[in-house]
Length: 348
Image (cartoon, rainbow, N blue to C red; front, side):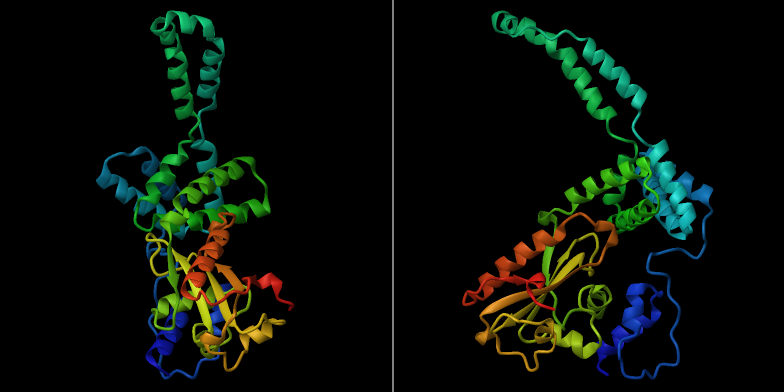
């Protein structure tokens, strides 16, 4: 076993078991000679000193209300680490608390709306005739509109914004939204739905294509990254190291979107097969042995696209990734003139 295969094997043994990582551990690796491995902290970063619910709730409040940088960083760390320690039921309670107690102040919004509706709109002809004097009558409108914009922002926006700029915060927000979606699947709670909608809008902004890096995944990448490809391949599971190496070898491409805040882990990735003719079955793509030389390829088949972050569901990164990869493949291989085919164009 080479060093890369050994590294992947050791990492998969050390990780906590989940449906995705179970798939890795079931891969057909050669027998290992190691006598055991030391335990590691869980993937989500939980600490060795679990916090109770009240402590986590207090740290969440501090993360929202405090402004001093040194104290704020510690509060954000305490909150995220404490959240990981909580069981699902307590996470649900905490998220409901965040959604309900840190929502916008509707009494203030209603009062501002009453003030706004009570203003008399100046006549347009008076504005033209009197110029600056009548223009000043709009100052009350501008003031209330500014206050309304501020009042329509929920308090939990502060937490989202601060976590986004905090080390590890973007990954944490993705995990938090994954929990929200899971709880909403069990029960459609209006306040939790509003929390999800607001967080989703923020993630769409922070994960715009301009903030993402396109990475061509190869066999030479770190084992930790290749492990993610194996774990999260959702369309056509990777059965063993030979299968993985084939998908990253001659006549194949794998591209992923990376974000600087989540280094070494593609948020979403797509697999491409360069072929002489359009495949009629997926078996032709997965078991084309040996693959044709790339100089003979006339078409590129996009046969699998997978997301690694359940919390980014609905962000629609796949559309942007497909467009970007099409541009890259066409630029690198202009000889390929056949239309690009996605996986749903293949007859299974």
